[in-house]
Image (cartoon, rainbow, N blue to C red; front, side, top):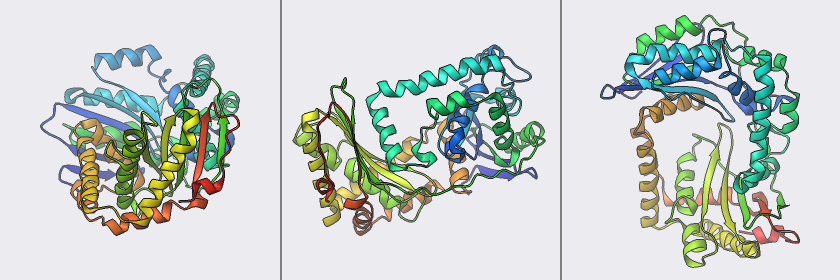
Length: 422
């Protein structure tokens, strides 16, 4: 474990991990759940996100207004999120306010009120949030892609659920699911900055270890991907949104680092092959990029571009040409080095703040069960070879495995599997 990082697992199963950064005057604190939207029953889709919203609407000790006022008095930034594999509540404050900040966040997760009147209002807020996706072209395209790439699995359903599932969730559903998931054994406390590990352990033990145990442990059911081609007409859009993707190695798998380098070469920046070919050489799109969406047991490497409807087929053809080239020949030594430097720089720059360090601690603990030292990650990146990049490209970009979604003014567009032969 890196210097300054400490971990304690209490008898209740509650885990506390910290990174001391004594040169700072701030501390970032988070309370995380080891399960997210993918662990929900399909009929309760969106319940984790709904609970996250409701925790800010009052506890047994604080009203929603008192939560907001106390946050401002601490000078902090209280935030929360729900993802596919975890839920997190975090705050950043001066180190002298850590105990008060911890008491506030612990109160949110351990004693929510689930006020029926607030629940009615917040349900409507979430339904409006769901509707917003229809008005944001790239988000709509992503939702359509995920739904068709992982059908009949929670990874294919939006984190916020659907209008139908959210409308059907009751207060009893929320309370029962909170009681099942928000238990010490499923909780992780992470903090980075000027923090004393033992003091935080004692705070966590007093506030959270006595919560009732439920015996719940999240279990990942690996999804089966579907390589479908979907044309989704959306007539009011000026541009067509294109998402092409295929299943790829999972987070922290043996091919994780070659995958990162492959992505950097393909579409990870303004010097990437797709950007130079589609934007700089042909002027077909303002932005084109690739990015991996990775989970503990699977992943998808997706390419996104937005272009005029009449240029869709040309953008797809040029993209397939670049995939074919990646599979046929390894990257040059200079291209490989440039990609490695970019991935390393992105990693190191992302860790400049205590908030980023806190998030890293939590995510490593949830996905790995341990901390992956920065120096070890940098060495793993440097060790990636051109042959490994080419091998992963051939593993991922199989014509029969490529999925494609086009959203926009594309009525009458015909796309065949042969057009994805790479």
